[in-house]
Image (cartoon, rainbow, N blue to C red; front, side, top):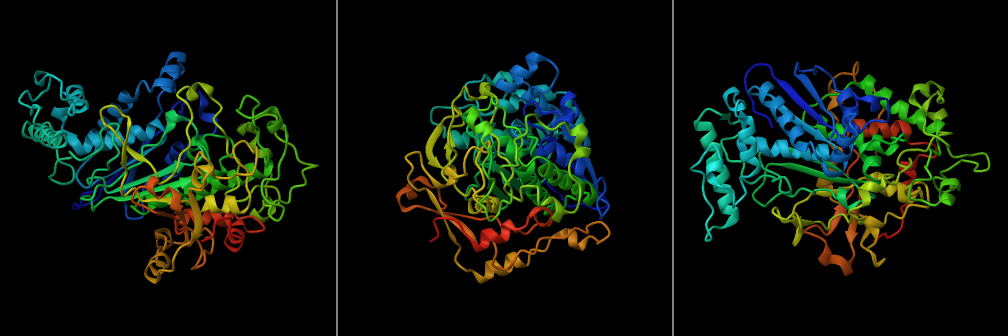
Length: 550
C-alpha cells in the first residue's frame, strides 16, 4: 500500500512466521522458514535512501509452553493476538508516504491477509483510536454478523440487517458506514484512497481488495493435509488494480515454505518471493543472499540423501532403499557407495560440509529443482484428513460456514513454476525419496484420469518481447552491490503451459491453461546459475521435455 508524498519515506516490512516457528526462540538454531530467512537478508537502507523497517512476528504455538504448542499448533489459538500486534505496529509507525509490506507463512499468511483486510476495512487507527483498539477489533470481527446486537458496537446506529436486505450490499454499506463513523470521530485515518474497504477479505474469504496493490502467493503442490488447504485469492471483475500472482511449486507445506534441513526447494521459492518483492522496490543484501544460497549448495553436497525418519509415513523399506535422485544421464551417484543419513545435520557442525566452487560441489549435490521433498511427519495435523490439491480447480467458500460452494474462483492468475517441469523431465524423486515423482496433483484426478497436460505455449511475439524486456532492477543499482552471475535464460526458454484435458474442462475455473512462470528475476537466475549442475538440468529439461506434449 503506497501513497506518494514529498520528502523521504520508509518501508514497513512485517514478516509473520508459521505455526511453531520462532527464529528467536530455542528452536532458532533449527532450519528456518522462508519468512524468517527473508527478514535476515533485507537491506536496512535502499539505494534511494528508503529505510526498510523490519518486524518479525513469531508463529502461534511457538512459546516454550506445552499448552501453547498444542493449542496454537492444532487450533491456531493466539492468531488474534498476532493480528493485533502486527496491526498495532503499523498504526504506531506508519506516516503518509510509507510502504506497507506484509509477508506470511502458513498461519502467518493468515495473519498477513487479516491485517491487510483490517487496514482496508477500518483504516489505520489514530493514537486516540488505539486507546479503543480492542473495541474496534471486536467490531471489525463482527461487521458481517447479522445477529449481533447493534448496542454492542461503538457506533450504536450501525446499519441493521433486514429480511429484505441483499447480504453483500448490506455488508458493503455497513462497512463503509462504520469506517466513516470512525473517521468522523477522529479514531482512524485513510491510508490510501478515499474508498471503503468493503470488498475485501473476510477472515475466511478469498477476494483480494483493490486497495491491495500487489498480492503474491507461493503454493505447495504436494501438501496432503486437509487442515492446510490454501486460501487462493481471486480478483473480482471490477478489480483492475491489484497485481496478483499465485505460483505452484513442487513439495509439501514446509518443503516450499522452508523448515526442513534440506532447503533446496525452499531456496527456489525464496528466490521467487524476493524477486516479487524486488518488483515493488524492496532491496536485499547480495552478500547475505549469497551466503544463504551457498550454504544450501554445501548442505546438498554433504547430504545428497538426507534423513527420512522411520516415523514418517513411508515404509521402513522406503526409508532404507536408495533410488537415484534423477535419471542416469543426470544423476552421477554410484548407489553402491551412497548411504542415507541416519540423523539430521547439526548446523553447529556445518563447517564440515564440502567446500569448493559451484562446479566442484555439483559432483556431489542434487542440482536445481531436485532437492528432497518431505512428507509431513506430524500425524496430529492429519486428523482432519488428507486431500489432493488440484491447481486451477479451487472453488469459493461460504464466508459464514467456511464450507466449499459450487462456484469456481475467477481471475486467480495461477501459474506453475518451471521447477515442476524440470523435476518431471529429470525424473526427480517424490516425497521422502520414495519413488519417481509423478506430480499427480497436477497431472491426474483421483480416478487416475488425465487432468492437466504439458504443452508448448503458442508463440506470441508481443508476450515474448515483453518477457525479454524484463530486466532485473538490481542490474541498474550498481555492480558494486549486485555482482552475481545470472543464468542465461534463452529467448524461447520456459514457453510452456499446462492445458486442461477435454474430459475435465468443467472442473477448471475460467482458466483452461496454466502458464509456466517466466524465469526473469535476478535472484531466481542467480540461484539457477549457482545450482544448475552438470549436466545443466534447466537445459536438459528444455531439450528433453516430459510427457503430454500437445
